[in-house]
Image: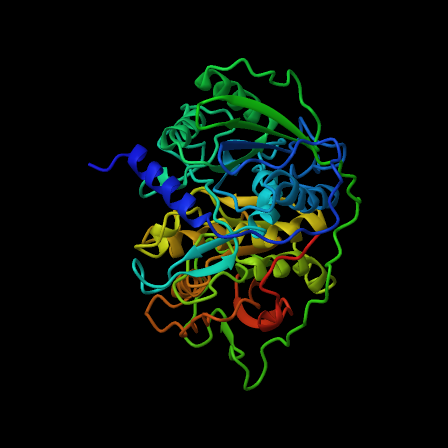
Length: 497
């Protein structure tokens, strides 16, 4: 039997083999950190602890008290911290693994918003690292290297947070961090890293309340009296516990010295614009309607009223067909950061929704691919939520891999009144969006005469599908809107801050 421990160990060995690729070159813009230690040794196991901001422990102004998400200042800090981590802590070398907080393990505010700040804070760093993965040829085919690094943020084998649907199979190989460490999974991850005993740099990104006890458990595991910090050290401090080949452990504290601006970050270079669908374009322009009493359509019972839902796809992710790491690639970071500006004045949603990134692994979507967490839809739309101070929620009660996922998702967003008189934006998996719309239309045409829904072209990352319900539940779906970002002209390396 293949155990969870075996799966995680295999994943770590795979990650180490992928990490042999050289990293990116130094970039400007980060704090000097002049008093920080030298970069990490490649001959040690380096456990890198990044305390991500939450409502309790943050740099003043890094987290929005109403949404529990990063502010523009917090996003700025994350972009600068990424460069500091890559160049001053890792010395330009590639990371070996990134473990981040599963957002739904840390609900905050009276609305129980998920802690999206943790994975959002470490995303730019992920884009400054490279990974080699195979495409459709699978094992034995020639790998392709891209600027992107997968994240492990999925639920482990312990109890799931309230409201989270049971995953098809706990993803031990992509297990992330649990805020309260309810089943001891955080310590188990570190234990496996130490047992594999292969040098490398392993990054743990979570709030201080999670990082502090995790560092203490490492001290006990290595049997060393490390002078661990007794209190939150501030937003610019990164702690590293290094274990040498002879099992000597030491603690180092790096000070990034960052002073981020409070404004939404400006792109460091131009982002080419793209035209929205029109006559003769790809994708083709379409409009689908379902009006009560017209063409055999009947408004189903319980439909919402006066609702608008904008449905977008995640950012660029596949440099070759079948290449799958769960994250978007560096070109996608350009898109994600540019969406807020590109859509300014064009749409005005008051809610942002996405797939729970801790619930889905690539193996659920593309069998045979490595099980990295499926973080890209949520990270694509998070900057938009940050720039506009819009609440960010996750769909956790529906398993994306379930056969009835399209119907359940349609029912959640278009029936029952929850989204009546609301305007929201939903970031999702593109192959599932037409299925959701088909499930919605099927309710209007119970005889089976529903209009056909076009597929979402594989190379289209820009289109927005707009679903509208009027005051009596009549339906319109179209793709006349787009983000307006030209995929073909996005750089292959991440924007530098």
